[in-house]
Length: 121
Image (tube, rainbow, N blue to C red):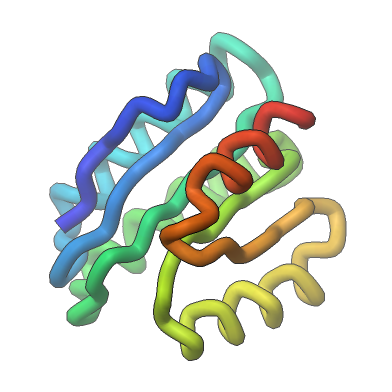
């Protein structure tokens, strides 16, 4: 499940992941990102991963359709908040692949630091 959350940054798409990600979940988050992009131009992303139990193939397809249509050039920063080492490793790999996006990982105890990081976009 993906749930949109408010972190107090107008151009942020912020969400919490808990459980399995469905196509419907992904559609809500991507619509939020699209609306923020249309309104603000550049956006930042806050991902709080409390628990991850997989992702539906249809959700992955939705994400690829979004990336093909909108792209990633409008994303300036991503903050990933989690206590899962394997997710931090994946985020570090993504940071190397997507060099034009500043991607950083934070522990749950560092949520305020993650938000401050995004505010300095």
